Image (cartoon, rainbow, N blue to C red):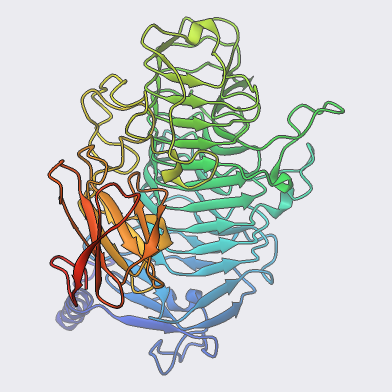
Length: 591
């Protein structure tokens, strides 16, 4: 019954046809800079809308549909709102038309409007946009009342926004499932939070990538750098996974856990390059220098509109690399306080933090484990600053170099030696692979919840300290057409090695049971690597290269031909011996 009257047969039939049409075939809608949002616009490729808002008018984009935005720069004068959603089986996708670049420029949007692009509905995919110059936020998920879930925001570049580059949350409190099951993947965020460019204590700042009152969120493979706000900030949220992001040179904090629980920060590369434009004056003390952001900081802030606030606890921080931050791990006891509780900080690699590697404010702490890490400081900078009651910490199986930690952080299971990094001091992850003879190798204790390392290889038993198991276990190796060198040790991803070669061969040149690489440049120069990071030059030039164990010592040797067909071999990688005769090809050569 409808308003007390029977539904007419033809009305029911029409309704069923409309439902069937929606589920039977997805519709492509089009937006273009020369489009029109009038009532007569069809949204076809030949009669496109002028805005994303137009595509979400009454009766337009729905479950399973794709809104294609044609290439060009959209000088927007109002917020774009994705106001209709899809279903779990048929999400709505909003993306640029294939092989076209779309710039959403928010410089003309009134500052009273919150964002360039706002997602208000569930089961939505937003991908591939360049969002810039927002007077507020770049992209946000911010439902007013109905919960939003199952949204993917991926492959976007967001920059030069006055506030956050990307923010998700809602007006309700953390006890309400307002935003959940969101994936934030492969986005690049830089030069955002321009409201804080002056960096004064009075200026306000947002997080660059902020998550508030949300749960079950994945933040993976994003680049967040050179922003005047915190890098990735989790506030009053639950079960957030922050994995494989590169976060550097942000203001105050690179990774922030603010009153959030059950978060997991894994395999992130977090550092400062010393760009003072993003430093903070932490102490407001004349003559005391400004400092870069902390690597990861945990605290419990208090805001008047936070009801029943969470206290940070049950947070896992593993397999990360921290380079030249203010501190790698910092607990701040300001505002609400509450201490560190149930934190596991394990298998991390820390190099050259500039104030102290570990800084914990006095508070009441409980059940925190700090284990299997490599702590390397330079220039006499302290390893630890622990004050107050430290009974809530258990330190074990750490390697310390460049200074001793305070006695409370020392353990009989520790190692005090140079970790023998492949190439410490830079910002590439593979610079912090330990060499095969490192004292960190097999010096750790197995932890049931940490089964892999930074590069997703299985942890050995006993495991190696720090972010990496030794990295000399090549399964596949190869060259791109441009000569870039890549190898894989897990058949699921590739790792780049600096340099360029025209030919590549594999072998165990030093007899350590692990695969090494050798190759030729286009000019015939010969190089080999036994650590998959740095290359050693062998004198001479060759045109072709092959491998074998020529003297039976269990190590791989090299052989090759010159351009004239002369034959040479080496069993020690120091000098070449010639073989009488000339050849055009060698058995096992690479081309």
